Image 1 (cartoon, rainbow, N blue to C red):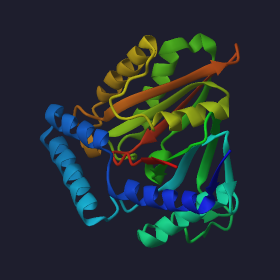
Image 2: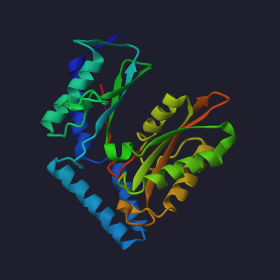
Image 3: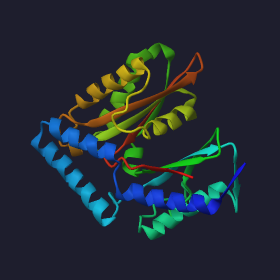
Image 4: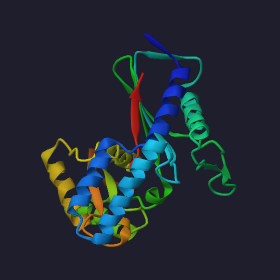
Length: 281
């Protein structure tokens, strides 16, 4: 049994959350550069060029990529042969988010009492923590700062199995059309299909952790990703919502077994600032 002091968890989460807010992953930069080459709208190209310039400034000056530094989605893969010492794991993750907010001068975006009080927690906690027990004695943590503008445009549908593939495509494309310019396109789409209502929603967010341009290993799902991408880009919403050929930079689908009477489909929209960072202990 390997022992890990939870102070190491706090330090890792703090570093990752600042890194994610200051620097776009290389695959996201590459996706924006590829979009710049194929965007036909002059205004759309201007928008993408501005996004790339913004990313360069944020990384070099260590300032946030966006004023919305996100709600902290944290995904932890914890080895079953790990024993945490020095306190509780979840509390250590929250301390890491709070430290990153203070050290990185990140906006505190969390309110408690969501129905009535809506009082800012002041330190961007609690994190939305998803923990998975895996084999081994290591810990891998991925942070995903999720902006409110794109999150608000996400949707979930409990389709009928008879709706089939066409029903899935119609729902996903319709979700993007309904969102319009609100989620700050060009966007990424995470789609969760199967499981239960809650599992589909989680799958759609986990899909956003896949590097841009990495298709699903299943050929039929891969084709579905490509078909949805084509139809979404045909909407003509374009960069910044000003019209154009690039509305979406990538579609990632994760699927899971489900009940014979169900076909849950969740769409999690990610804005162009597709921030994430991962590290291990």
